[in-house]
Structure formats: C-alpha cells, structure tokens
Image 1 (cartoon, one colour):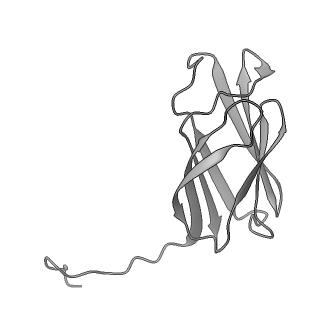
Image 2: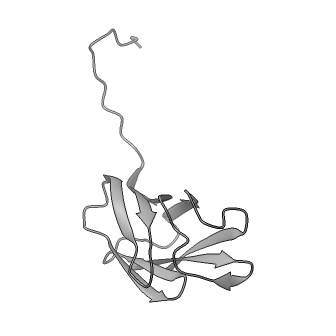
Length: 120
C-alpha cells in the first residue's frame, strides 16, 4: 500500500447512492430544496400532504431494508419546541413532518438538512 502524494487523486467508491439537500417550507407551499448532492439518478420531487406533513418522491428509489435517512433541523421559529419525524412509506416515497408541542405545523423547516442513502 502506497500513501498518495500531493496531487494524486484516488477514487472512493461508496457502498450507497445519496441525496443530500437543505429544505425550506413556507406557508402552504411544498418544500423547496437546495440540492447539495444527488447520486440517486433521478430528480426528487417534494409535495405537501397537509399542514406539517410532506413527501419526497422518486420512482422505485427507496429500496426496503436498504434505505437510510437523516433529518436535522436548521433554523426554526420555535427552535426549542420543534421535532421532526421522517419515515419510508414505500419504494417511491419518504414522508417527513414538523411537530410543535405535539401538533403539526407548516413553516417550521428553514434550511433543514435531509440526507437519504440507498445502499447497493
């Protein structure tokens, strides 16, 4: 094994494909995303189901027992009282929500980070 010298580039093969984005949601609009990385091979769409409940969709992307996700709050108006949940619905859909003091509310996601990994 040789240690690479300055200027050498080694390809790193990850055992997964990934989607990472900063997500913001306002009013009754669907969330919007600033995509940081997308190697899933498609264009993810966001929709609003109802107050505080949102979906991420990509056909046949979120394989059962191979999909991992993380949701981290960014800046929120009620930072101490907001919790977020995220779950896989099916191969096409991941759902997340914003809960304030036990009730779902819109407008709580401001530059929240979502990362979805699908292992090979």
